[in-house]
Length: 576
Image (tube, rainbow, N blue to C red; front, side, top):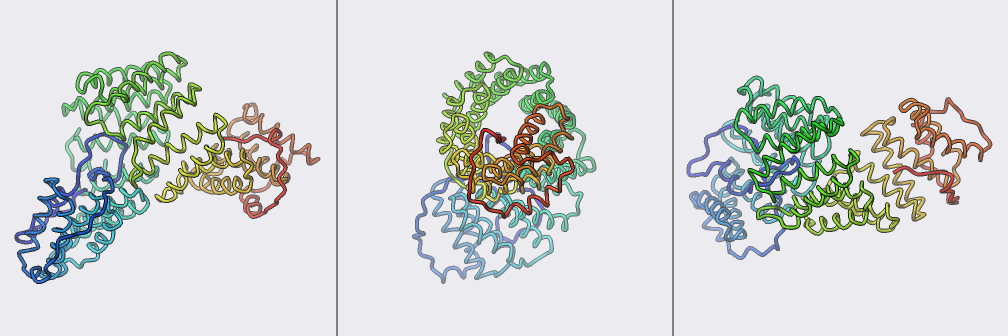
């Protein structure tokens, strides 16, 4: 958790940062940017009743609170009995409340109590404790009050993150950042830490514009306060490169990665330089600069093999990148060979390899097998990845992504019922975790709609396409190719229900947009022309090149219902 201010703690009390450090576990493996990098995603444990009887009279001793809080921290650190640590923390909080009343000591004890609840996987019980800690009117200096509130909001954000509720998590981080800026000003180096933390959360939620603005702010603060080529600036440039890559700005991403690599070289961080080389290779691959990408990957591979060993997951990850590159350059035998090399490493993981790392690698390899037109093999890898991941709140977004891929595989091999079930499960998980407004969610709804069409569940398909359309219009814009694909599917479904006029109106808009974006000679434009011509012939009409506003058209048609369903799939195609 980023720091706010250094304050004088009450006598005989352990500092807040030390207490939190004792109750939070750091993650040791590299993974995608997370809004809670300092808190491990704990597995829920079976709840056992707190057996220790609390003697209410003993809680009036003013020395008892600090003593119990120290016991709680020591018990957690030893790993002996987390439920005993929980009991100590509960009693400490009660003692502080009775002896010193509202104040920093009580807020600190509540933070520790919530951290222990989280370590036990009891997130729902941690939430009200943290909310109460924020509401506690901390006595003392203004900085003391700011520290208590800032720490409470950041820890609350971490807890929501572990529950998979990214929207709530981001709101808490934003509240913490506002408090920190009020206390320190907007150019303090500690503000940069919190901005980076919040930017990582936005990246995980695929909110790249917000993440980019925060990264720019951190880099501005570094220019003012940090030494040239600092490790902190290098970390922020790597995050900024990730954001630029996600937005398709590959040249800017490459620039940030090169600067980050120079900083790491200056600080003697050989392994980190290799990790950046992998990212540089990814950018070159996106730019179709294949020789430069191979050089970057091979350079990273040499370092990983010498520093981490031949069987390290980092080596497997580079094999996967090389497999993807060789597939894209048409060298399918080499591509499959690198996939097999990666799978051999995942089949016999070295000690310390997490199940999340293996599942992520298997998922990436499955995508390459899908591209190689081996959907059954891809499905086996995805199913294996699913078995490795526990269905905990923190893993649900990852599991939803795998289920979405499985749905695509099932669809490709004609198993439409299983495809729809996989998509529906992924949709439910993303809705539950507050991730129902992203472009990915809109695309997922479109895919589920296609499966519903194949099962002749036309009413359901229309609902899914219309929800996907609204999301993609908001996230990507009405002229984006993904949005136009959903419009096309919606038009096809209207046609299947006998709503030919509605389908024609939408398709005329789509064709106009595709002609503007792709040109009249593009194969996709030709396909749309043929579909439109078939419908116009059926309706006895000619093409209306003016058309009317799609917004008005869809608003009018969204609530129309017709029960008759003319199943003319051969006439009108669907787009995945």
